[in-house]
Length: 413
Picture: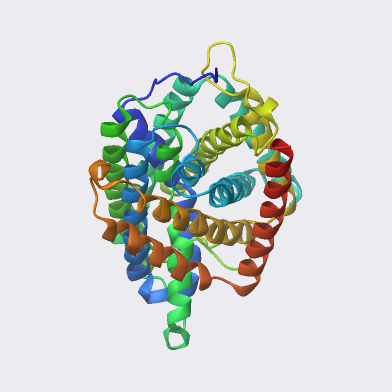
C-alpha cells in the first residue's frame, strides 16, 4: 500500500504557504520585468495577469477539492484527461518551478553580494548554498518549514510596505524613462505573461492536497485569500515603482539604486532577500511533491517515492528537486529562468483548466466559464512570450513526451 503524507496543515498554514510561494520574486523581480515591457501600462498588465490567475486558481481549487492528493495538475491530468497530458503537466511543473526557484536563489545571492562585494562568480556559489540549506530545512518536516515561512512572509510584506510608503513621500524619479510610443499589444501581453508567474504560488496549495486538513473546505478558501492579498500588494508595489522606477530591470537583472543608503533601504533589501529565500523554500516543497507523485506512478524512478519514517517528508524526491534547481542556478540567469518558467507554467495551467472542465456537474462549485476563460488566457499569454523561449519550451515538451512514451511502454511489457 502507498504511504500517505500526514494532514498537518490548516487554513492559516495553507495561506502562508501560498503567500510564501508568491511574495518575493513576484514583487522584487517579475514586476520589474513587466515594467520593462509594459511601461505605463504596468498596472493593467498586473490586473490581466491577476484575472487569468484567478480563473486558474478557481480551477485548481475545484480540482483539489474533488481529488485532494499531492501532485496538483499532474494527478488531475491523469484522472480527468489522459496519461500524456498528465505527464506533460508534471514535466512542465518541475521545469517551471525549478526555474523560478533558481531565479529566486540567484536574486537573493546577487542582492546579498551587494553587501559582501565578493567576486561576481561567487553569486552562483551563494545561490547553490541557499538551495542546499533550504533543502535540509524542508527535510526537517513541513511544520518546521511553516514556522520559518511565516516569518519570511511577514518580513517581506513589511519591507514592501516600507518601500511603498517611501515612494509616496519621495519625488518622482526621471533617471529611467521608457518611450511609451514604442509599446505594442504584444509587449503588453508578454508583460502579463511574465507577471502571471508572480501569482502562481497558489498552485503550491493545490499540490499539497494530501497534507491539508479538510481539503474540500480549506484549499478553495486558501487560494482565494492568497489571490486577494497578493493583488492588493502588487498593486501598491506597482504604483510605487511607477513613482520611483523598478527595483530590478534590464536584460541581466540590473539593480536600480532607488533609495538613499540608510536604515529604510537596508530593511527593503533584507526583506527582499528573505522573501526570495522563502519562495525558494516553498518551491522546493512543491516541486518535491510532484516528483513524489510522478515516482509513485512510475513516470520517474519508483525509488524516489520513499517517505521518511514519520511520513513528513520525501527525502529522495526532495534531493532530486534540489539537484535540478542547482543545475539551473549554475547554468542560467535570472531573466532566462523567469521567462522559461512563464512559458512552462502557462502550459501547465492550460492543462489545469482542461481538467477542470471535465469535473462532473454534481461535484462542481464553480462555473465552467471560469475554466474556459483561464484556458484561453493561458494559451494567449504563452504564445506572446519571446519566440526563442517558446521554441525551447516546445523542444522540452517533445523530449518529455518521448521519455514518457518509453517509460509507458516499458512498464506495460
